Length: 107
Length: 114
Image (cartoon, rainbow over all chains, first blue to last red; front, side, top):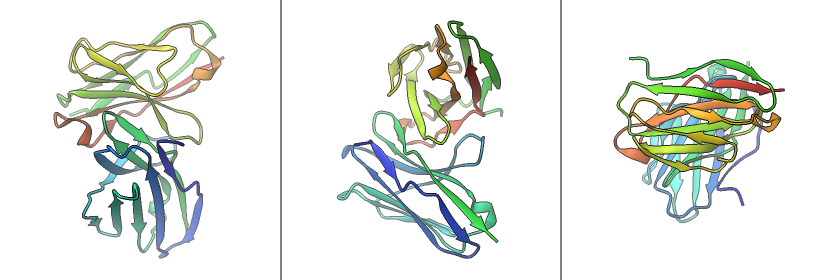
């Protein structure tokens, strides 16, 4: 089993749609959780950290379920500019990345 | 404030050649990382460092070496390059709070081994 697994995608959605990404992790001792965004041929950049209580940043909502070892990212009212690959990242003694889920938002 | 810088941006190597990928950060971060990303795949951790003089292996360390003589620099050495090392290499750093901090990435080095 991979340490961090994500929905394989790709997701192709129209503008304005709501889309959800899921991620599971295998190390129950993991301490930190993030969603990163990676545009084509660019470096990953932090989208948001994920806290146990859940957190929201504008149209983006992240949730963590430690018991199920599961993280989610919800994007509401999708924009064309949201098109990217979304990476789930889990940290313990080091950081482990999921393979990413590609999102394409179409007009 | 330049953040994390990497050189070179692109490189083509022949099988068996060696090279060093340079990484420098100017944020006084303790933690530094080297990743590789193969086409259509996620990032795989090669090596990481929790401070000057301390390095440790990640998921895919074979064929690579690192050193951390200063806080700022974390070079990655490829000895005897192989086609399987064709990839994009990213260097990253996190702040003094350690693993729980945001990772800041350099722009990457695209390496092709022929």
